[in-house]
Amino acid sequence: MSMVDTSITNTNNEKNNSRIVVMCVCMVLAMGGLAYASVPLYQLFCQVTGYGGTTQQVDAEAADGVGIIDRDINVRFDANTASVLNWQFAPQQRQVTIKMGEKMVINYVAKNLSDKPIVGMATFNVTPQAAGVFFNKIECFCFTDTYIKPGETLDMPVVFYVDPEMDQEKALKALNTITLSYTFFQSETSIEEALEERAEEAAIQAEIKAEEVAVKIDNEKI
Image (cartoon, rainbow, N blue to C red; front, side, top):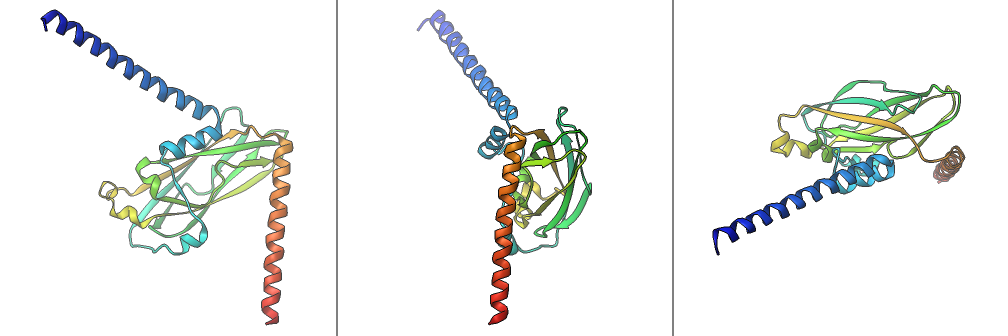
């Protein structure tokens, strides 16, 4: 092969590589844009890619089996709202210090400052991202419709713990602080749909409570 042919081949390879890089960048930007454009898409984006330090969702029964180790970890709380959402939103506590494996309950508070009901939905972000897989939420208000009446204040609890297995990660040995941040956006769910969801949830909770009372009465008879 002549020097001219080699030069042409190298030039073509460079062009192909450049095209591939540009295509990859465009795909990433497109996915990111779609994710931020819609909260449900953002949720799927986080679950698939691990973006934002995807946390783990666990039930209370599974959390009861987690041991507590003697290593402190600071957890900071941050709150943000989209510019179009006329809410006041903040954590009641800015930071707590807990043992790894210790379950903790904290509250965020949101107030509707407008003169009309609003439905919001929160996304989350955990930093550093590597700690997200060890941050376990038992109860959380993220990715669910939150309906608040005009002037109403709503308490929203978050129940969580930090998995003790994080202590085994060499890269996280020196980590002593995790930040959990929520951002509220206006939900695409209508007011009517949100009210229907609340009514259905209230009916379910009423049934659960009635079953618990019935079981308690039966146990007392035995």
